[in-house]
Every structure is written in structure tokens, then in C-alpha cells.
Amino acid sequence: MSQPKFRTTLIEVLRSIPAGKVTTFKLIAEAMGDVRAALAVRNECLKIAAEIPEVPWWRVVSSEEKPLPGGLNKIREEGGLEDLLSERFYTGIHVQPIFKIMAEDQLYLANKLSLVPLEEVEVAAGVDVSYGEDYAVGACVSLNSKLEILEVRLEKFIPQIPYVPTYLAFRELRGMYPPSRLCDLDVIFVDGHGLAHPRRFGEASHLGIILNKPSIGVAKSKLVGKIEGNSIFLDGDLVGVLVNGGYVSPGHLSDVKSSKEISLKFWRDGKQPLPLILAHKYSKEAIREH
Image 1 (cartoon, rainbow, N blue to C red):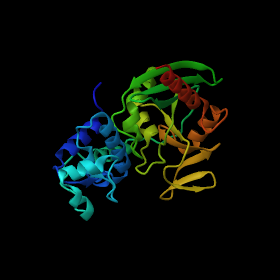
Image 2: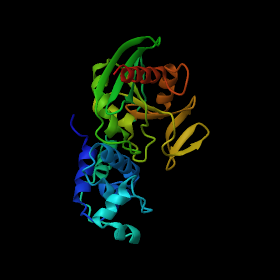
Image 3: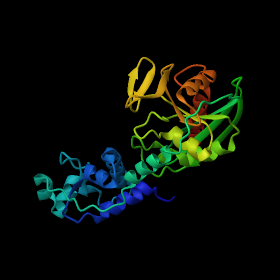
Image 4: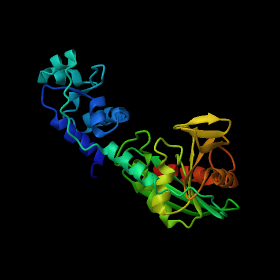
């Protein structure tokens, strides 16, 4: 099984840190393009320590100089304790700024969005991803206007990056796109945000663009914006609405008003439209079966 790109990149960074030197998860995340990836860096270092212990995972610590479990003795053996205690963290990290590149892609593609009223919808699909130990499964489920299931399609895949806020599409599209493009649909609901995203280009927008289909994001929690009544505003612009506890925002080829109306048409119970609830159900079942 090939290693995900994020792990491959991190291993290269770990091996580039000189023996006797110590750096931090935050400094590596900044070099990768977004300090919010620091927790993902730490979690991946823990996995590397357990699975590939010869890679020098112990050369990375928290900003408070706290090593990973078992790392202090390794640091002492290499003579890096002085650097650790004096906070002379190694800063010569050279790595492709993958998260900065992703953000630039989002800003570029956001200019291609079409936020227009979505007219008649007879078939709606929902797409969601569930995670196993080292792989994930994407499920796309389509329903007619009577809320009857028409299709269920699945895709097993290996995520290439860990979860980092605002970059979810780059983690999940490998599992969302293949089953979604095979389903006949008028609109697709995505378990994530659309316009209600710091770069106005969440996962629902990304999937809508590459499918060239109307898309709507329905998330279970807020990512950005200010709530006024049932409306979600970002920098003064209306980007979404609250519907039955879910955060609805247009993705592509839809607008706020029609996103709300179409969501309600396919809503039954819970915080999301029925196509999304079923997509979650089938992706979870696929994980359990494996």
C-alpha cells in the first residue's frame, strides 16, 4: 500500500532535520503553508513513531518543548537536549507549501463559481465519507422527489492528507467524485460547506465545479461567519442559512434561497437532508463490512 502524500512529505522533513537538532510541529506546519496543520503534523508523527520508528520522529516537539512519548531519551542520545531546553528550535525546514498551494487553488476556482437560482429538482443525491483504520469509503445515494432510493454507489480510497480545517475537499474528493459522477442527479448535497467558507469555496463548491452540477453544502457545525436569526453572514455578505439545525450554503449553480428550498424538499428528520443521511449510513456500513 503506497504512503499518502502528506506522510511522504513529512518523512522527508523529519529526515532533513540534523541529528542533535529539534524543531516544532508548528514550525513544520508553517513551512507546509498553514499553522493550523500543526495538530495534523503531531498526529502523523505519532503514527510514524509506531509504524516506522527508524524515521527520526523524536526531533519534533510541541511549542512548549514537550516531546512525543518516548522521544526525550532519543533527543538526549543525539545531544539535542540543550536545544530543547534553550528553545533554539531548528528553522531550516524546506518543504513544498502544500496547504498554501491548496488555498491558492481554492481562491482561483472560487472565481469560476456560478451562484444562480436552482430551478426544478426531481433527483437529488447526497455524498459522504466514512473512515476506517487506514482507508475511507465515499458513498453517493440518489433519491427521487418521493424520497425513494434510486442509486447507491461506493468508492474505497486512501486519503492523501489528514484533516485540516478548510481543506476538507483535498482529503475527501478522491472518494466523493467517482461515485458522484456515475449517479444521475439534478443536484448533489455535500456533508460540508459551500460558500460559507473563509475562501468562499468549501467542499460542496469544489465538488460542484468538477462535476459541473448544482451542489449544496449542508454541514453539521459552523465553520465561519456570523449568525443573525437563521442567516449566515461572512464579511457582510449572506452566504448561507440555518435549516433544522444544519448549516446550508450554496456550492455551485445554486444560490442561498434555492439551496434552502431544495434542502427542505428532501429533508425528513435530523440535521441534514435524507440523501446525506443515507450516504452516511451506507458509507459507515461499507467500513463495517470491511
